[in-house]
Amino acid sequence: MATWSKPSLIAAVIFLLVSLLSSASVANGGRSGGRRLVRSYDEPCKEMRLYLHDILYDYSNSTSNSTSAAATKPTALSAAVSNPGFFFGRMVVFNDPVTEGRALPPSLEETVVRAQGLYLYDGKVVFDAWFAFTVVFNSTAHHGTLNLMGADPNTEMRDISVVGGTGDFFMSRGVATLRTDAFEGFTYFRLQMDIKLYECYV
Image (cartoon, rainbow, N blue to C red; front, side, top):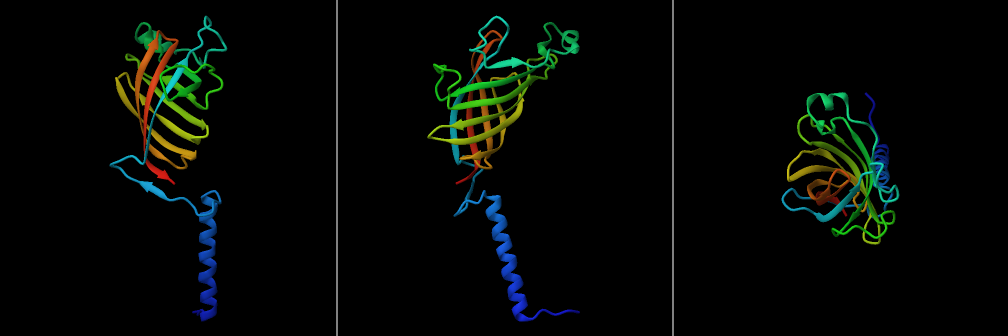
């Protein structure tokens, strides 16, 4: 059986440590000093309240003011199970402005925070949906993204998961509590999002 000399063993240990440190640096985006994970399941390490504004294009409203559009029609099953069928199977793609207050911004295209993604209606006899979207931050306060996804049932308050992020929200995880704050028919709704992060890298 081969034996290691003392100098060879020391060299092997140094090589292993250098390799591990290099891998950690690459995984962290090459940042000097690295990041520190802050994790707490009792108190959030970061929280914010934001408002998502969705204006659905329905051929009668302005294309410049619309921020979402249906990418599919409701399925045949939608009309078969109920009337109007709750749009079962319909998918909507959106690029919505997000604000800190309830008011719509003066310019819908120039907001520094946006929500980009899709929702689809998956309730046959109730008005349920499923969300998957990214909140994109591009301001002096925050720069990066948060990824959210989950079921959006027809209840006053509902939670969806924060499953990751980039930039200032690198690898963040948590919960976003949604509440429909306002709506106008089927063309506009304002969604209140209370985002609480329980894993943050700082």
